[in-house]
Amino acid sequence: MPRVSVVMPVYNGENFLPQAIESILAQTFIDFEFIIICEYGTNQTSLAIVAEYAEKDSRITVLQNASMQGIAASLNRGLYAANGDYIARMDGDDIALPERLKTQAQFMDENPDAAICASRATYISKAGKRLYHKDNLSENPEQAKADLLFFCFIHHPSVMFRKNMLFRHSLFYDETYTAAEDHELWCRASHLTKIAIMPEVLLKYRWHAKSSYHTDGDAQAGQTVRTMRSNLERLGIAASEAELRYLQRTTCQESFRDYRDVERLLDSFRCLILEKNRELKLYDEECLEKTLSKRMYWKHHRIRRWAAVMLKSIAKAMSNEKLFSSAIYLELNGFAALLGRALT
Image (tube, rainbow, N blue to C red; front, top):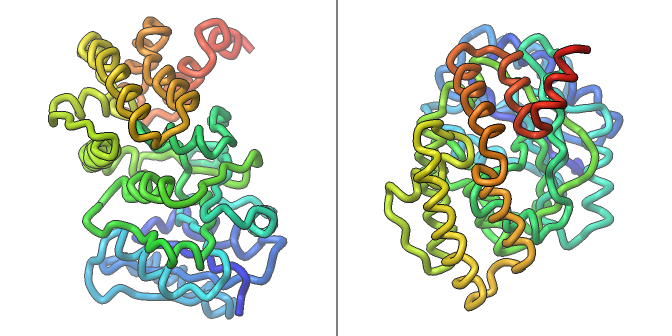
């Protein structure tokens, strides 16, 4: 039996599919099976690419959905089909670095209390050019758990699961989610087991016009709100739909015009969340304070945030990779660093 099962859903994406598949087949760790789930309706070009690689490499198993299942159900099918001790997620438009499986399998061997581990990632453009590296993830599992309260910072295709703990805790994807299914799973898992963040960059995460950031933005926003509602309900906090929408806008759907309402709402929710957590002790208090401080970014870096939000909105509308990269750089590093970068 293989030690690692790689699970990758496919729905078209023929432009990037060969690179994604080859990045797994080129791993320095070779004791793996590669399960590719082709969604119903995938075009013939993509199906032919998958079939060609499967014919050449016996480690590839292709599962074809007989009807439209959706991302969560397709992933669950892959999890049930996996034979390995560990299950690694992969997407059809990203690139796994050669040492990814080896590094993650070794990490899981050395950390038996972790059910899930995720690595850092470098964002790349449609053409494969480096856009930026997001290095603000905490390696403290308690901090990771607290951060998940508001936003999903884990790169889905960088994740590796420990199969026996996955099944023991019934940590499967909620099939009622059509987007943001990963955030919901990480939140649920963080209250049952340990999620570890590795320091290594093991994935190239592709940002392009057909990525879920662009095509599923509304669905992701709505289902992020749904996950946030569940997170707050664990703390005994009931928030209205309007309040949740404002809180969600401080994550991935920020709006320039309503920042004042978001700021006021965060101020009031901050005290309530801390108070409820002192009663229930769901989160480490120091880590929760840091998470809430991150959410107060609007207040601490107001002008920088305004500029970043506008740039990201324009970049999203235009699918402009350079503007998006500049917006992220501005948000993380400030005006001086952005100006210095532009002049060099």
